[in-house]
Image (tube, rainbow, N blue to C red; front, side, top):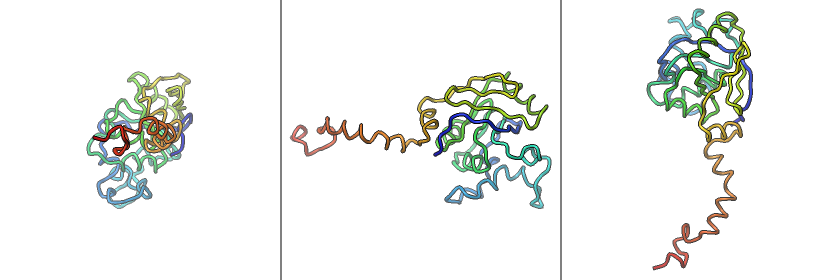
Length: 207
């Protein structure tokens, strides 16, 4: 996993609440065993017309949204069934962060594990950000994960919360397994110092 620290990117708004994981990536895409191709199915029911062509009215299809790396959406994003494919599809499309008023817990946790940053900001800042994007579709935001701040297009810094362990893993570019592997030396030293807790044949635990 690539480290996530500070980055700037164009923001695109998809203003709706309760966007569920089936809308993010349809169930037909859940049979795949790798992440390639999932970006094609992102928001498929909205991005495409019945004849298979791109829907020109969908925000992500508008020319000014090309290259956007930050998705701004509403409340309870990622609700519905648990599926890792939803954050995979968003990341595969090119998004590095999703800014919302709130997230479904499972979606948020799945996102953090793959390096897609779910950011919750307050309603006043959310409305301000949407106004900036409406006024300038090329508006960009800066995300500063070490300082837990989003710099809005107008220059105002907005703080956001994040779990401390998840932040550590993102900043250092490791997942949970990678973090444990980094502790291998300390684990070996602890086991050597406390053999009776790990070796059932050790004299200290015999009858």
